[in-house]
Length: 105
Image (cartoon, rainbow, N blue to C red):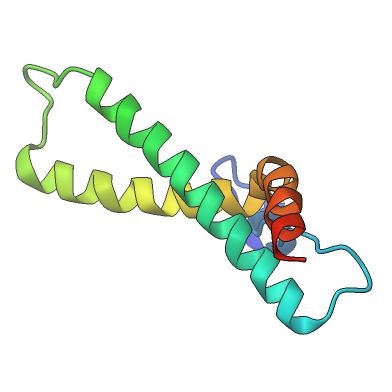
């Protein structure tokens, strides 16, 4: 159990994101390929989206943290990209994966 910002206890399972599901009946190699495909598509999409979002923001005149803020902002963006990819990349990459596997058959 962890304590949230408002002081209530939250179960540890609420802090983790679900792993993207793979259709039943696939072997381990196909499941690994699907996970890697989902990760690649999700991290590419969300990473570019966050990067362009950061470019569109202007630096604050008095509250900008300098180079240290930029370094840690990149680390935060990487973590956000991974979490977003885990949460929803399978929905985006599903049709792409189907087209990818059709060409390999």
